[in-house]
Image (cartoon, rainbow, N blue to C red; front, side, top):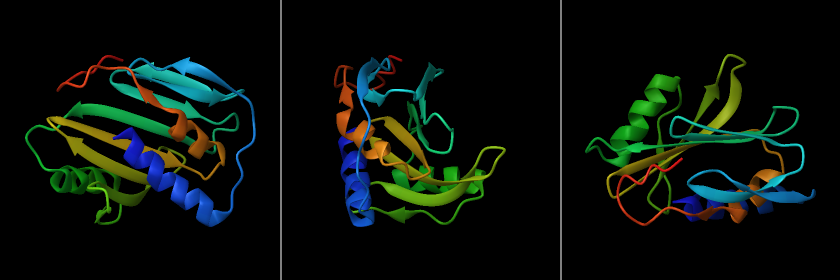
Length: 152
């Protein structure tokens, strides 16, 4: 799932002509590792991972949970509705994406949802910092490839 999102974000960043600066440190985020740029903040808790830029204007929030027997389309519709977002659109790689406003500050956000096996992964992408692509490209899954491996 992480590779699917990385590919989609890479294409978007290339289209925008954004470069990728900054040194990074490999960081253990429970379920996976990622190269986190110096100064960025991470938090791992309750089945989610949050990675935020130093100014808190860009970041990633990833949540993993059982899919409750629902399809990706159904879950994406539910998430979008709960967030007051747009209608989800299917992506070429089997996910669903929608725009919405995130948090108390109502930041512009993109939600991306994938379902694999009995697991759903929901990612929120905030802002357009060029390091977002680098972070996603660097992610390496540490968990065993089996259902419900929520090992944050």
